[in-house]
Length: 110
Image 1 (cartoon, rainbow, N blue to C red):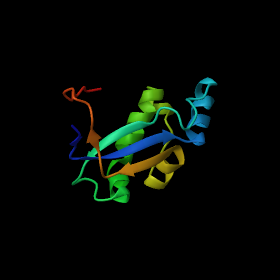
Image 2 (cartoon, rainbow, N blue to C red):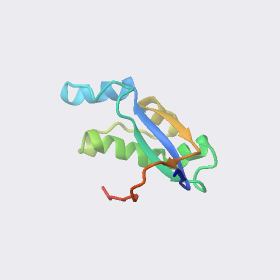
Image 3 (spheres, one colour):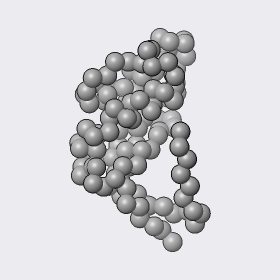
Image 4 (tube, rainbow, N blue to C red):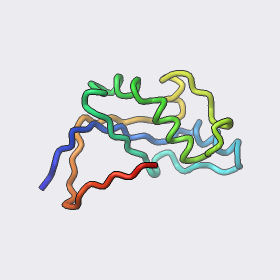
C-alpha cells in the first residue's frame, strides 16, 4: 500500500562551487554533483511552490549541508540570499511524496 505524506520535498545536490569550497579547505572534493542527494521534507503550508519553499528554507538547508561536510562554521561560505545559495546547491522540488515502505516511519534528531 502506498501512503501519501502531507509533505513536499526539496532534493538538494552539491554544485561544482561547493566542491571547490571543500577542496580549498582540505584538498579533497565532496563528491560528484549527482551523487548522494539530500531530501528535505517541508510542510505543504510552508511551501506553496518551489519558489516559496526555497525562500522559506534555504538558510536551514545551507546550514545543514555545510555542517554535514565541515563543522567549523567560521569556514562556511557566507551566503546572504537565495541566489547565492543556488550557486552552491542544485534543488529539485516535488509536491508529491509517497511512502511505499510497510515499516513504521521513524524520526531521528540530528
